[in-house]
Amino acid sequence: MTRIICLFILATFISTAGISQKYTTALEFNNYIVTINDSLYKYGSAWGTKFVESRTSHNWEELTPHRLKLENFIQKKREELKKLAPFKGSEDLVASMLDFLKMESQMAWKAFAPFEAFDKNTSDDDLKDATDNLMRQTKVENEKLEQLRATQDRYATKNGFSIEKSGW
Image (cartoon, rainbow, N blue to C red):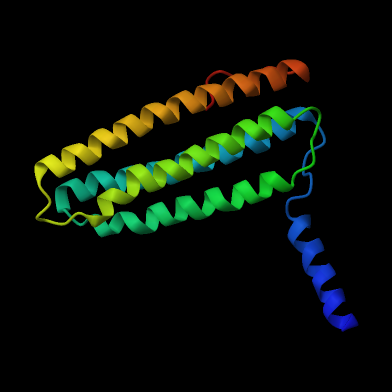
């Protein structure tokens, strides 16, 4: 029994050690948040590239692995962020990123997944409807991203650094 308890404690320590605070300044914490968004962009771009190919090939099932990678990444980061201790007033920034990740997860399900049910016989109207839905979800994504950027700007101001506007 003692061995099991020791293994549990060790496993808990190892799982939380990977998300321990890897930063010593507010700027480093901000950069950590930015890397999450950068990765979301890369996953979304990979899906988008495959989407363009699928429109020509009508091989829609190839979208599934890209959506699943995105969803797994989102879930991992949501769990990681929820375990973080506040750092130099980061509560609002973390909450904003969690909100953004929630929206990204919903977008993957509401806007990306419907295309996976398509085949060569899918009507142009169905394709148009799904594409229109994707565009609506993209608009919501852009609004949430602006909210995240505003929260990031407030965090930067509060901690005495500035945000490079050419970034995300």
